[in-house]
Image 1: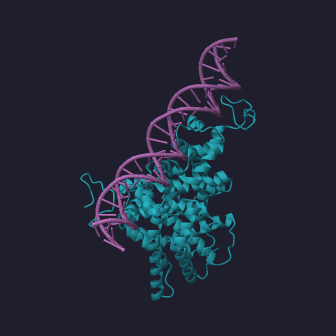
Image 2: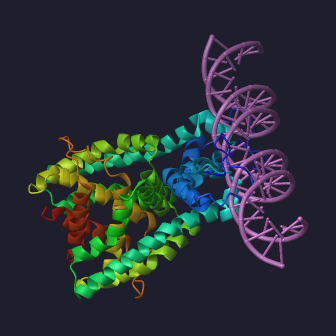
Image 3: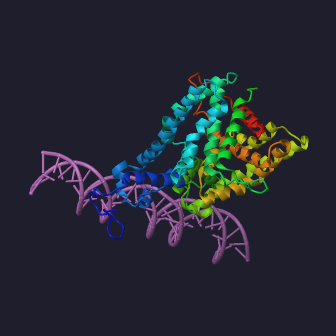
Amino acid sequence: MSGATQDGRRKPGRPNVAEETDLRDVILDQAELAFAESGFSGTRTRDVAERAKVNHGLIRYYFGSKDALFEAVFRRRGGVVSSRRLTLLESLLAENTAPSVEDILHAYLKPQWDMKHSGPAGAAFIRLQAHIHAETAERALKLRSEVYDASLKRYIQTLSSVLPEIPTQVVALRMAFFIGSYLFMLNDLGRLGDLTDGETTHLEPDAMLHHLVRFFAAGMRAPVA
Amino acid sequence: MSGATQDGRRKPGRPNVAEETDLRDVILDQAELAFAESGFSGTRTRDVAERAKVNHGLIRYYFGSKDALFEAVFRRRGGVVSSRRLTLLESLLAENTAPSVEDILHAYLKPQWDMKHSGPAGAAFIRLQAHIHAETAERALKLRSEVYDASLKRYIQTLSSVLPEIPTQVVALRMAFFIGSYLFMLNDLGRLGDLTDGETTHLEPDAMLHHLVRFFAAGMRAPVA
DNA sequence: TGTTTTATTATCCATTTGGATAATTACAAG
DNA sequence: CTTGTAATTATCCAAATGGATAATAAAACA
């Protein structure tokens, strides 16, 4: 790091061209971890700055405010997840006009699943979503809808078409059950294997994914009384 | 209110015997609402005091700290829910040694369901739980287990006995799916009816409960591959 | 080469926050 | 009647917090 003084601190002023890392991204990464651990209000911008090893004024320079920082964090990955979801669904439909419920749910989960297992930042993003999911603040709700509603709608349509006996309203409701569940699950897997009194057989990540899919596919197909 | 001065403020000093309301409970009620809205770190003890119309020092007097206040809030209702759950399960088993999966899940949900519809404070408690469910802080996890693990274990055993083909480990996992989902659902019902492009048929609370039960009962019964 | 822009740290500031202590008043006990 | 105890408000305090401004240095541009 060419811009660093002997004690690891950067000098003020424009960094050397040789400076390789983009601090804006470093801040986003660290903010993601921090928000995931502590939620929005539990996170202090100063902590983020410290983790990212930048002056805390730099956050304001790049993002303007703590609120804006959070949005940036959320949109960055949310956008990726949402568009990958759509892509997977389209390619599924290209192969087969009536895919199975299992395939559809699997496609929905896969992007976040992969992200979760792609490293600490990806895993953090899921925890972050669980937090935002528990929030009632208008800001949070708008953000969620904005990022996810489009792909969710598409999934509901598709499911509805392969489950003609189930009213679309009910499919939508069940999809909401599904989402609530997978967010919380991905969030605290492992911390709840020990409720059976038996030996804690460790579940492979992939096995878990299939458990989820099988369980919710059965629920989706349940006759509506 | 005999202890109040003309502007509605109480005097310092021990209140009149005639003072009817127990301020400790008023604080708990208001804290519950505040924590539900804003989560733990988003809530300021001063806000709680203001809502309860007491001096904010009184919170410390009764509870000692913000942490302790939160625990008190959680235990108060958590204890009720947990024990009502156990009671319902026992009476179910008294009637019939092999109740249906639907009955078991219904019994699990009923206490919180009733609480939710018992007034704003009850509804707040569910939101509060959704928050705590999203937290990873050791404190929160311990509290959750402490209050809920006993009844949860009992439900898992019972379900396992009426679903002999499903390994207990899997029942436990599915129960976790179920819990994640219902917390979230109860939390923001109504804010997600509008994803179907159709007219927003409003769901009766009871209809919702049955949707949940039917859906998850089907999931519980899904063959394990 | 000189000047403007850009990215970065340094410093400062007002407000909020949780908590501590002191003052006050009603009731209880002797 | 006096002394103590319990419940309540008033005030105070230090630390944390988000944000604003100033200083600085490299790069880009003229």
